[in-house]
Length: 228
Ligand SMILES: C[S@@+](CC[C@H](N)C(=O)[O-])C[C@H]1O[C@@H](n2cnc3c(N)ncnc32)[C@H](O)[C@@H]1O
Image (tube, rainbow, N blue to C red; front, side, top):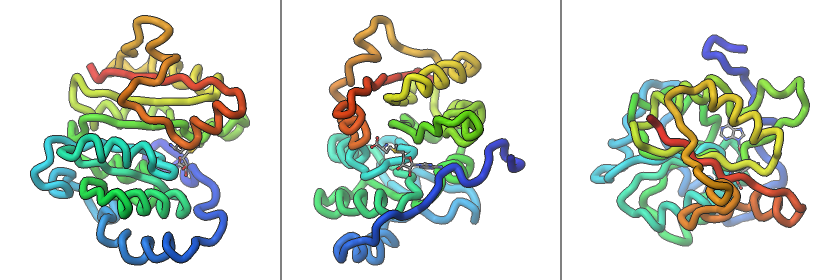
């Protein structure tokens, strides 16, 4: 445990297979143009990243970035920040930015947690954590992104009335999320009936991991919490 209340090395490897030529080029040429300054160098002013934007949303663990790219295309007036430590994921996100010519995405290539800590209070209008790594072994529970630390930071960053969206296809992780949400008085779960968490809302596109979970017979839950 470090002095921020979370352990280091939440994620394992940062790369699996070597990148092909185009993703490698995007990492070299596009990433420097869309990357956010290293949060260890000081606070980050999100509005300065997106001059003229109406709001700023953050996705923690974008994977291949399909969800963030979809949101960015649909909401061009909103600045989107994607945080992802895995090289192959970031390269895919860059490919989405490049091919769809998305001007409203900035990328944090690394752990989302120092980035969150570098953002100012009430600076976000929406926060997404879709299919976070489940870390199924009990001795690894402390590596889970959803944690007391996470809900405290989310409460600090999100403005009242804004949304925190969490998806998981792992029953134990869903229970875990509720367990921590119950101890987070700044959030209320918005669901009124089963369909509210069993059916993916229209403005919530499918991610790669969700598609894989469905293929493998797992049933995702789509949880929306409101910042009180
Ligand atoms: C199971 S994948 C889901 C990816 C994507 N959200 C989706 O639904 O397709 C979890 C992702 O979280 C990322 N991740 C793990 N630890 C993280 C951290 N500390 N900060 C940001 N992302 C993290 C992983 O690299 C991985 O891409």
